[in-house]
Image (cartoon, rainbow, N blue to C red; front, side, top):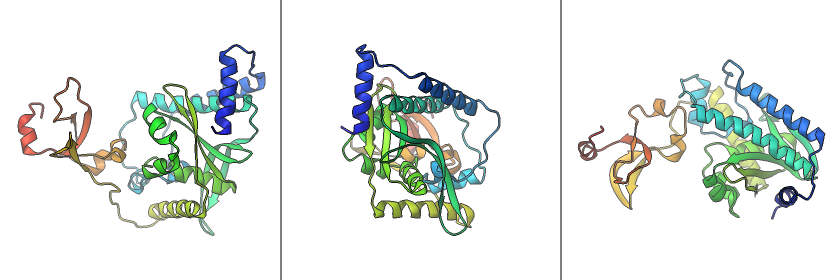
Length: 296
């Protein structure tokens, strides 16, 4: 068990059993201030101008190009807004609990800049710096917690399917701060479980992130033509191809998917005969399935 997990488990277990652990008034005030700042940010009028920064530089280039050109995105839903607010508030809570559990915290929310070359840089603000390096805090779904952040090979899993750009974000902060990136402190927002997904700190990884940041910068400041980063995928139902094609997971959550895929259709999974089939983004539906589906 990671030392951060152990310290938080000990502190929270004592609190749960009524052993008399207390929350210092100073930390209560800090937490309240952080919540105030989060709500102010989320409920301030006006649209923030797009700027390449650590928190988005690792996202797919096609998405960054859309954002930089002010292509109209899907309007965020109320539940998405709520998840963003919860993420900021729970991040503040994790930082407060880390401090209360006597882990030495060097800095929180410090602004940093990473020089790409002589004249250009990318800036950002990391979550927390402990004695051994930089950590990023994530509040995640139960599925992501169990299948990406908790396994022993968490770093490889996160990097393999990283449409949110977590690897470039974390390493970018650390490279800018000239500290090692130690990983992600992840909170399962459904169960309250906490784990630490440890990062790899090798020259190969930092070179990979440096190249990714430079590529993102050049693609937005040069004349790189737009191209999709991902293809649609063949629909397979019970190991049998249906002939239909659907969006991959990376594109499904993109707010610009309608600009990339002009004929998208959001439908209950066509081959399913269940009572409540899952919803699927279709890029192509065969004539056979169209004829069989009276909702089309």
